[in-house]
Length: 238
Length: 228
Ligand SMILES: [Fe+2]
Image 1 (cartoon, chains in turn orange, green):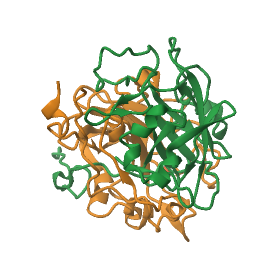
Image 2 (tube, chains in turn blue, red):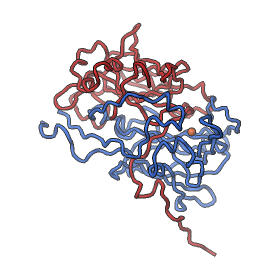
Image 3 (cartoon, chains in turn cyan, yellow):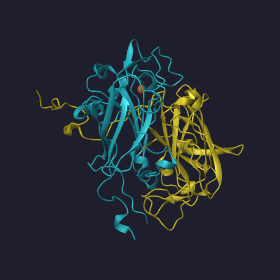
Image 4 (cartoon, rainbow over the protein chains, first blue to last red):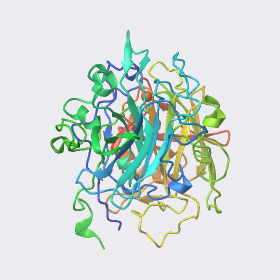
């Protein structure tokens, strides 16, 4: 018999699927109740450590992908990937994508009239070290308008995607900046109730700020953790 | 003159120990295509470019991976496809589907599946990622998975775990694909938790040689989504 160590469930900081302030959720969220299922081998396994065969190896400098230097404020973002028990998650991938300094995405469907930057794509990824640490270099993305409501603007943010060790630990999030007043009036950030919304706000850090080169920001990502002891099957495991 | 550099006073933010806990989920938004779905992400057995949408950004900005070479994969190669619909029955052209599955022998390519007696296939990871196209269609090429253990002494019918992402989805929706001709479905412990009248939203049907699995986010025939 296979021993299953289930993962913790969502904590109070996870947003609902339906949040009418973010208008697109209204027609894109289920109305039937979710069916709660136990964690099986399907949910407790994942493609850990096989990043080379999937999205690929590290690409940690988003300012060095083209001939020239991108426009904007250069920043160094560093932190750790941990589980909710505080244990580091080593050798795990974090995918990164973002708008440029003017708040424009390289995506063809982004029609906002802000300049594209030929020297900036805005996509990269990092793999954590043995202590769960990561670091990448990029430029600070700009705010941008969107069609959710009159005069709607997204705060500056970096999109982050992590798989972690298991299907159950998968998370996609956005990292925000500490000095941004738009966070308070952004429906996407506010789908996460306070105080948990503030978990997504990075911290300016003078220690990782590089003199005459780049501002440092800290951001830890916390994945769901496993319960300490098996909750099923352990009494009749052979 | 030197001044000691110290950090500003701590705030209620990501680094505040009092707030420590799971990082909240946020949407992928509409512009993820140059950042997430790599060429070949939806082809788990070959080296095609399935899964990516490189037409949505200039070629010089393609920094994603390319499908690596793969070894021989055992089992039946299948195509799994479907359309993702919203509450109004409109196809969703900016969704992204991820799958996770065992190989044909029923083994997960994961350090957390340590059943060494069941063989792994070199080059078959069992994880895939596909963007939907302008018609809301996603498509994977993979192998039909084997049965895997369930809770207690139960056996789970062959199935593929599915995650749905997209603009308007603040967090991932999780569902499963089962196969209509699998005899094990009747005994599957997860299907048994689903109200009988909704079970068929989890069953892929073979249509013209491909396995069809539409995903309906809301409304009539709303797909069953799981709390995992
Ligand atoms: Fe964005």
